[in-house]
Amino acid sequence: MNETLDVLIVGGGLVGASLAIALDASGLAVALAEAVPPRVDLQPSYDERNLALARASVNALEALGVLDAASPATPIRRIHVSRRGDFGAARLDAAELGLPAFGAVIPARELGNALLRRLDACTRLVRIAPAQAVAIEANADAVRVELRSGDSTRSVRTRLLVGADGSESFVRSALGIDVQRHDYRQSAIVTAVTVDKPLDGLAYERFTDSGPVALLPLGERRAGLVLSVPTEQAEGVAALDDAAFIAFVHERFGWRAGRFTRPGRRKPYPLARVLADRTSAARSVLIGNAAQTVHPLGAQGFNLGLRDALVLAELLREAQSSGADPGADALLARHVERRADDRAATTAFSDELVRLTGSDFLPLRIARSLGLHALDRIAPLKRGFALRGMGFRGDTPAAGLSR
Image 1 (cartoon, rainbow, N blue to C red):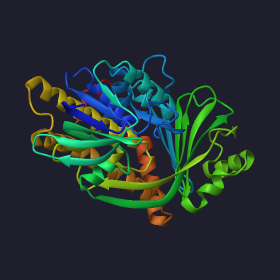
Image 2 (image 1 turned 180 degrees about the vertical axis):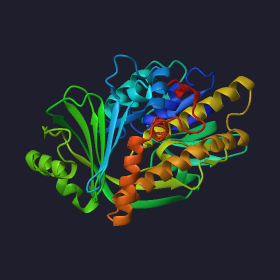
Image 3 (image 1 turned 60 degrees about the horizontal axis):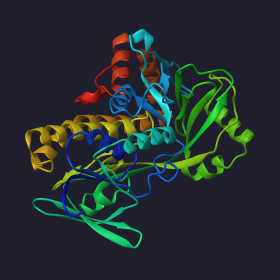
C-alpha cells in the first residue's frame, strides 16, 4: 500500500468496526487494521458478554445497517433498580414515559456477527488482517504506521490515525499519552441463566456491599447475568458447580425475578477504570476503550465508545465534503470539544455510582434510599434519568437522534 490513506483505524473490535462502517460511503480512503483474522470466534471483544445498548446506540446501529428486524436484540422496556439492605426501589417503565423502549440487549457475539456481515458488505473499505501496529511515526502531513503480520511487516501512511485498540492500546502508548488507572478490586462474572418466568423486557440492577448484579432480558426464558465479586473470589465463584453458583447468585440477588437454573459458561473480567489524559495527538485520535474504559455498571462502556466513533464519523464526512484535511488539528480539537461533556459526565457517573452504592455507611444508606424513592416517584426526575441512560446526553451524534 504505497498511497496515503485518509483514515487508518487500528482495532477491529466493536467500536473500530462501527467507525469503519460509518465511513465506508464517505468518499474517504479508509483502512481497518485488525489484530486477528475477521472471524467472530477470534475477536476478543466479540465475547460472552451481553451488551445493554442505549436507545441512541440502537438507532445508530440500525441506521448503519448493522441491526435490522431480524437481529437477536431484546428490547428493554422496564428497569428495576434496588440496593440490598436499603429501603425503596426505582421502577422505570418506557411506556409510562411515552417511549417504545429504553434500549435493547444483545449478546456481544451476535453483535460481532452482525458487524462482520456489514463489514463484508462495505465496498470501499480496505481491511488489513491479521495485522498489529508495532511502530508509529507522526509527520507534518501524515502518520507512518508499521503493521506486522506474522514474520512480515508493511508500512502504511495515513492522514489520520484512529486508535480503537482497547484498554491496553498500543496506539495510545506509542503516542506518549498517559492514563489514570483505578483498580476497583472487583471482577465481573458474565454468563446467562434460565428464569422460570419470562422477564418480558424487564432489566434489573441490584447493588450490594460486594458489587452490583445485573440481570438482562434475552428473550424467551433466558437472561444475561453480570455478577460483580471481589477479585480474589472471582475464580472460585466462576468455578462453582451449577447448583452452588445459582445459590450464590440468589443469595446476592434475591428471588424477585423468580428461580434461576442452567447457568452458562462463566468467565470473570477484572474491573478497572482507565482514562487517557488526552484523546488526541498530532494527526491521531483515540476512541472507545483506548480513550476510556469504565466500570460496566450502568452499561455505558460500549455506548460511550460508539458515540466517540459516530461524532468522529460526522466530522470526517463534513471534512470530506468541504475538501478539508481529515487529520487537521482543528478537526481533532472539535472532536475533543464535542466529546468532552459526555465523556466527563459518563465516566464520573459510572465511577461515583460504584463508590456510592458499595458503601454501607448508615447516613449514606439513608440518603441512597431516599434518592431511589424520589427517582421512583418524581416523573421529571425519572424522565431525565431515563433519557441520559438512553444516550441522549449533550452533543448526541445525529445517527442516534431518533427516539
